[in-house]
Length: 364
Ligand code: KQY
Image (tube, rainbow, N blue to C red; front, side, top):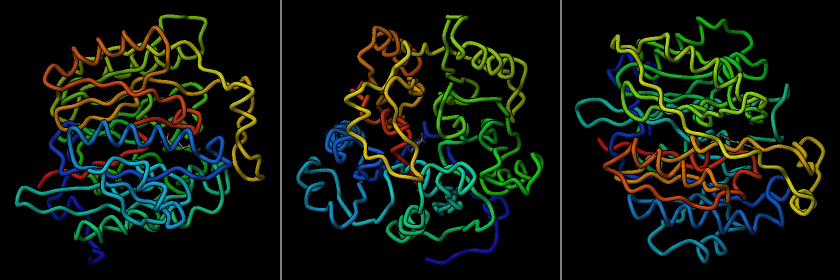
């Protein structure tokens, strides 16, 4: 694996949309007791279910720390590949590589700097050195060269692309003080354009209410295909989520994409507020420097945090009446894919959801 000193745009590589074909997907294994309750045991079962569900559609590789190798191998389905990749936590979307491809069968990795969603400013745990090495290890495992951005912090969950030159992100996240405070909005946009081969960046304002990632876009909006965006929505005007979603809807409806198309926006209704229970709160180790999990706190629950697999959609269930509505909406959005829900409260309790724990490798 070589580290390249060019950029994907100069070299003719682009980031495909998630809805384009995949070779497979990577995940990591949850275990840290200051983020996952009861030593990570309930979360591990949920991650294993997500992996098994995705493996119906594409190859799944799960990276685990050595001390969890035997347990992970035992809990994960036989056709899920388990490899040793050290990590500080289990958010593959965010610390993993972003893959870019060209039209001649070339595949490369973009390895952004990872700093635990805000470094010493407002990051979620310390240290994050193992997480920051995950993308390089993926490039080694996939036998591809990589671009390493030592001076640019980015998590994969903070971007979505349409594969045709357009990216959506949020100002709340990309302009946050803990990422790249030395860069202007225009400079950040230029780094994205160079490294993902884009023509247009659409800036939403904020992500899901109380999202601890500073508002990752992957919890609030997603490209279903070029020209179509799914947006997390509530009709309840008393919910703080309403104003956030409405502001983003207005932006999406006013804008055009890189090809000059107007966007069609489809609303994906959020569940009723999901709150941390006393039992859940008490199951998490309280550690200085890690975000506490306090009883009664609202979690950033959204069906938009789904994974688009080859011929499948794997979406979170919250044991809420809206689960059925989400399945119906996703079925209409993806008529050629099988839509499968996985109970995902345990992932949500850790601060993210199914999209956040996956990272696809495009086909070449
Ligand atoms: O939502 C994500 N992309 C990750 C959330 C990380 C939370 C760490 N506690």
